[in-house]
Amino acid sequence: MKKVIAIVGSLRKESVNRQLFNNYKDLAKEYFVLEEASIGEIPLYNQDIEQEPSSVTSLALKIAESDGIIFFSPEYNYSIPGVLKNAIDWLSRSKLKPFDGKPAAIIGGSPGNIGTARMQYHLRQVGVFLNLKFINKPEVMVGKVFNKLENGEINDQDTIDIFEKHIKHFAQQINRS
Ligand SMILES: Cc1cc2nc3c(=O)[nH]c(=O)nc-3n(C[C@H](O)[C@H](O)[C@H](O)COP(=O)(O)O)c2cc1C
Image (cartoon, rainbow, N blue to C red; front, top):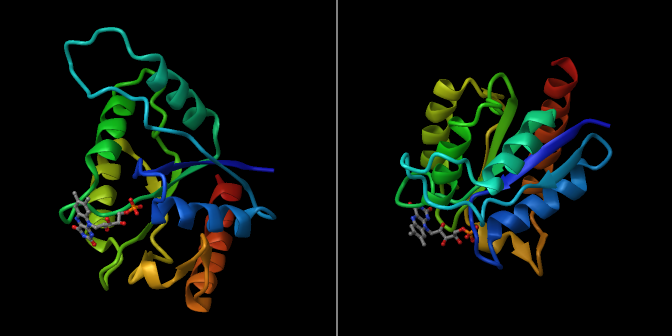
């Protein structure tokens, strides 16, 4: 079974984006194994630090050995949350080049109507430099996300349908590469 790494761009315990990840992971289990790799221990990037932190090395290794990566992230101030961008900046300097040619996707949920669309397009732009192979469709932008989750479960059929469609497309992509 193919193995995919999930990175959640929120550190908060009750994160709705982690709840989306948990639901997606469950729906995907017949297609691929999805495992979260934590970014919470990664220090702030500082080019003066010559020794790569072990939290970065182990994350880079997990991604390099995986068949793909999916970002589940909120939108902060119309863009990528700092904790996620910081992790990406560290990983971009890793000798393992964990993102190079890696199949990738973005899922995000927000309380507003357009469900992290602006963050997603910024992340896609960053992915151009990193040579991440983002799938283009379907886009999964879960607007009004707080109405669509109940006790950690998605209660909205349209969201479940788009997750299932996305899982099938992503599985095709990782099986091809
Ligand atoms: C610093 C900050 C900036 C935010 N900026 C946006 C934004 O630009 N767009 C948006 O839809 N929501 C924004 N929000 C609201 C988040 O979508 C909301 O807090 C969401 O629950 C965060 O995701 P999480 O639950 O996975 O942590 C922002 C929240 C914070 C704390």
